[in-house]
Image (cartoon, rainbow, N blue to C red):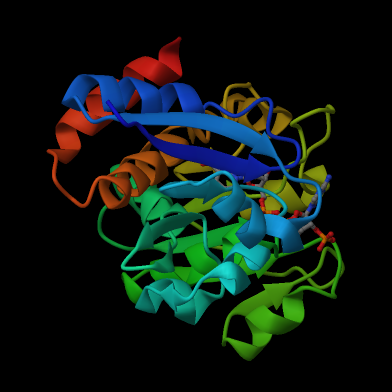
Length: 266
Ligand code: NDP
């Protein structure tokens, strides 16, 4: 039987749980797919490598999502608007790009705050670009806090209220999100404590997009009695949506989620 090949491109990529999630889902639905990982140092080679490996599809993680956007022949309208692609499929002789990070994150947020509310993102990176837009389009008010000014420009141009540590005077947030990698490999919080105290004063919970570890940010929120969520569910839901594209929307999303949740737990 000919198997279709999929990979996740990134650097680093050895930690990625995507292969085990997707392979479990292929097995459950009986799809002839096989999913691996490929460490790609130079993102500009992504398109070449896609064809050399004769892939049917791929996911893209840090730091290549903007290269992935440029590598596509055709873009889904949301990916086009936000300028970031994390899922590519080869279809009709073209590389077609999608963004599943943002709808994945929206689904997680809805489990904590279903009917809109005020959200603070601590970050101004690529993932925040797509997620901030989908949240605003879904009725949430989003503000951005970043440690430095440079990357805030694009958010300001997009109409978001933005702060650096020095200018921060926001309040009234329902959920505060750490979308930086602070706390992934070190013991640091994503912002100074006095800023976090202010940001969290009315919050019901926090989300940290880092997955699989109890970050200092989650610990800090727990000391205040807030609800917490790490990045596992975001990883899961972006994976379910990517799998759905890979397999031409043929299978039940609940089945895919079940198999991927099992894969994540291994
Ligand atoms: P980017 O490199 O585009 O952005 C990094 C951002 O984080 C910048 O705003 C940077 O600030 C800030 N930052 C980095 N380190 C620190 C720190 N120590 N303290 C404060 N701010 C910091 O990354 P992405 O947006 O692509 O990804 C961000 C994170 O989200 C990654 O950890 C990634 O793994 C995670 N992620 C998780 C997913 C999941 O499924 N769970 C899905 C997608 C992403 P500055 O501008 O000053 O440099």
